[in-house]
Every structure is written in C-alpha cells, then in structure tokens.
Amino acid sequence: MIRIAAVGDVHLGEDARGRLRPALEHLPDHADLLLLAGDLTKHGTLAEARVVAEEFAGLPVPVVAVLGNHDHHADVPEQIAALLTDHGIHVLEGESTVLRLDGAAVGVAGVKGFGGGFAGKCGSAFGEPEMKSFVRHTEKVAARLADALHAIDVPVRVALTHYSPVTDTLRGEPLEIYPFLGSYLLAEAIDDAGAALAVHGHAHFGTEHGTTPGGVRVRNVAQPVIRCAYKVYNLHGPDERGDQSASATGGQASPHSTSRA
Figure 1 (cartoon, rainbow, N blue to C red):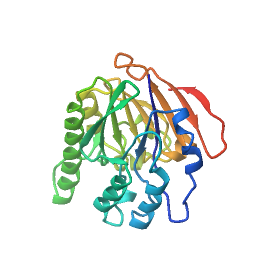
Figure 2 (figure 1 turned 60 degrees about the vertical axis):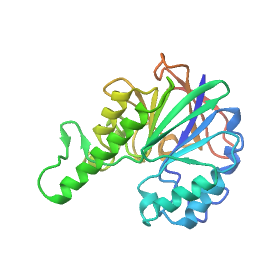
Figure 3 (figure 1 turned 45 degrees about the vertical axis):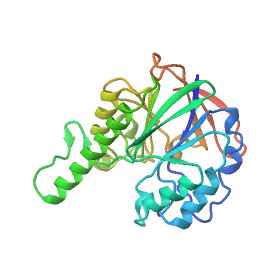
Figure 4 (figure 1 turned 135 degrees about the vertical axis):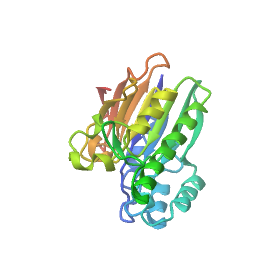
C-alpha cells in the first residue's frame, strides 16, 4: 500500500511562517509521500517562496510539487522552482519522478496545466492569435503530461496538476469560469497513459471527488475544499485503480480521521 498525502492552494505569504509545519511533523505516521498541487504562494514572490521552502523542507517523506497560477504572478516561476529544489522539493513541469517508498514504487508526473474548458464547451485554436495561443498552450501542456506519464516505468502512476482535468471536481464553482479552471485535454492525457490517481487544486469552491472519462480517480485537494493540512489517499496496487481509502489530518491539533475516497 502506498499512502499519498496531498494539498494545494496553501497560498503562503510572508506572515504564514510556521503555520503548517506542526501538522507536517507528524506526516510520516500517515503518509509515505506528500504532493503539493500548486498555488503555494500568494503572489509568486521569492520572499513568499522562501516561506514555502522552509515549511516543506526537510520532512521525513519525499515532497513533489507543481506550481500554480499564483506562483507565476511575479514572473519568476523558474527561480521559485529552483529555490524549492534547493530545499529538497521535487518540482515538476512536464517531467516525472519515480520514488521508492519502503519497498513500493510510485511514479509522479506533473505539470501546472492550463485552462480552455471541457468537451462540448471549450475553446479552440481558431480565430484571433490570442485565442489560438491560449488553446495551443493547453495542448502543449497536456502533451507534456502524457509524455511524462508514459515515461514512468513502474505500474503505479500519479498525475499531479494545478488545473483540473474534469468538471466533476469543479461543482460548486460558477459555470462561467469553468474554462479558466481546467481542460479536458489533461484528462485525455491521463487516460491515454493510465494512472492510479490524479490530483489537482485551483478550484477553491469545487468538490473533492471526480473521475476521468477513462475511470481514473480525480481528487481536488485545494485546501479550501479539503479543509485540513493535507488529505491522504491509500493506493493498494496498480490493479485497484483508485479504490482507495482516504484519511485526513488537518490543522495543528486536529485528530486523524478516515473517509472513503
């Protein structure tokens, strides 16, 4: 069994130093790996990224992250990624990593993702250059996710994005902004390569549980949705694609609880 903890949209500012660390110190009791689904900072500054690095560095479990749109706001995402990497956090953008966890192996492929909408109600690369650029960027990002998933040479694969691959986990958000919350192309990439689990953030008013058209379990782990320091998903093997139990640990003093994924 592989125990995967995940959270996104923690939006740490310079005034948030130490906010999550007390809960994270107990992480090894509940999880073997921590995934960060983007929007780690408020405004994408290096000062905020240093707070993130201090919060998540040196944990007794591996930490794998993607950046979110907030982490791009100050136009220094490469420096943020480098800073986090220097603190031992794996930052993915179109890459994958394979982790050996107490005899088990899991591969994580990550991209930030992008918007564009969902089948039947999506943008297309037609018309003005700005629209074609918008949609082609999503196409490029989704292709990189597919390539990264295909490159993983172990049976258990996890897709980590900031933007959502499905509409299921957007329920609760205004329909008008769905095109800016994700793209069906991410789900196509996940289904094409296969995965045990897909994790994303970004949709603060969405829903935790969803499924791709191909049957891959999708989990929205934006902190405003899961309402805890992180959520844990137990993967029981490559033939049990997401038939997982889930446990959550929230806040500095919240008890550990278990729920069905």
